[in-house]
Amino acid sequence: MNEKYIYLKSFVSGFLYVFGLSKNPSSILNTKYREQNDINEMEKDWQNIGSDIQKSYEQYRAETGTS
Image (tube, rainbow, N blue to C red; front, side, top):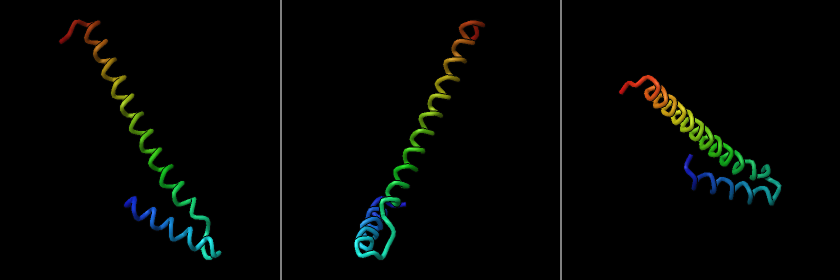
């Protein structure tokens, strides 16, 4: 979802919330940041897994003397 659209939607929801015509808009932004944080954490996990595999392979090559 486009970031500008999220902020516009949040602004409009906030405006409507002031007049009692909408729910609290903070949930819109919280969901966006929570999703982004999850994506970043998953990316870091996969990078760590790849690094562990590479270290294990290099250790295996050193122990067996293969190139």
